[in-house]
Image (cartoon, rainbow, N blue to C red):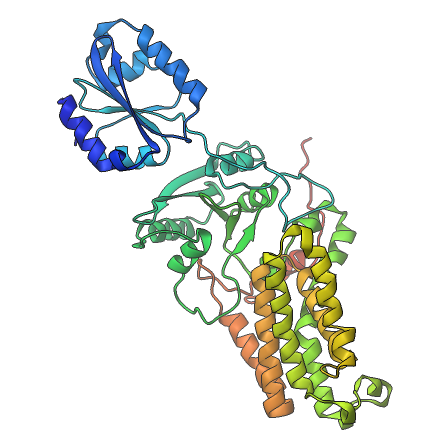
Amino acid sequence: MLSSDFAHNKKTLEKALNSDNCFDIIERCITLNGHDAVMFYIDGFVKDDTLEHVLEFFYQNTNDENLKDARTYASYCVPYVEVDVLENVDEIVKNVLSGISCLMVDGFSQCVMLDMRTYPQRATSQPQDDKVLRGSKDGFVETLIFNCALIRRRIRDPHFTTTAVCAGNSSQTDIVICYMDNLVDEKLLNTIKQKIQSLDIKDLSMNQQSLIEALYPHKWYNPFPKVKYTERPDVASAVCLKGNIVILVDNSPSALLLPTSIFEVMEEAYDYYFPPITGTYIRIARYIITLTSVFLTPLWLLCVQNPELVPQQLKFIIPDMSSLNIPIFLQLILIEIGIDGLRLAALNTPDTLSTSLSIVGALAFSQFAIDSGWFTMEVILYMAFVTIANYSQPSYELGYCLKFLRVILLVLTRIFNIWGFILGNVLNLFLLFTNKTLSGKSYMYPLFPLNPRELLLKITRIRPKSKRTD
């Protein structure tokens, strides 16, 4: 706690902030009507022009009566909107390190905190992952306050609530929980708040992923995503208006949507910017393509291993086994790994070279691979479809989950044949039905437990009924 001794207070804050060893923590000594004062702030987090105007007002103020205590001074002599008064050293240090300016005056046992901060940020352009042909083109950025503003711009309702919490003993990362207080599940909301506030972790270095792993440490082996991500403010707003919860983490340009089911993970904003019949077709097509990407290569491998069970009309799918240099199963696994290698290479390739190298990579994995005898044409064809089909659904995490399910089916089918294919499907269904969200509810809702009306709304894009006002 601070005292009325200015020298002691100044030394305490200098030590707590480690300002002598940090070039970007500015200590600005000033004089206010004959009284010594000092300001602490982070260089780069303060609006310079605003700070100049505030200091100019401080110097012009000659009324000594208002220098009795910090609250009186803040009320009558601070020409700024966002002002607070603090006396706890830990709270003052936390605020300064987050970008808030601190003013301490001789004789005050409290500090005046001025929120004149500004954070470096990129433009709120359309996100790369959640593109739409129609609709808004703005997206979340790395600055928390701007992300909250993007949602509040779309929800002009006093029930919309933004609760701020912190996590990480070292990082003290700001987290905002957004919800409609008249629609939200109070039990789920209290559970999330308690879990975040009780976290005992050093930092959230990986932002949202670190938060998810800390909140949900169990069943790490289940590959299905526990939450849904979005970089679109319109999607986050729609989720809040449905009674769900949106979590924003500072320095992260995306939001976490809770609770989440497999149907919500596969939903896309693209569905709602078209007429209902078109949106329904797109959604059903996405479900069919996603399921096909999981079962196509395992089913084909099963047919190759059991050609006698294939109808005569489909015999053409069986390759010439006499010309194979590498077993079909091994070819499929090699291409699964090779595609991930190309994907990782594309992420680290400079933009000026990505197009040309992608073409070279596609050629190397197609015609050249076939001519050299490494792979058959059928393997290249089916794996090309599977790779493209993975991008028909919006979740990057779900894409890798589908890959793991497909590999499980391939391995078990290769080892145990038909019974392996059946066992693989049973195992995948077990992972799907036993995956629990942070709310503890079923990951398969509304299919399990069955809610026919909600299930129809998840599968189709039905126009909502408008309320009559007459």
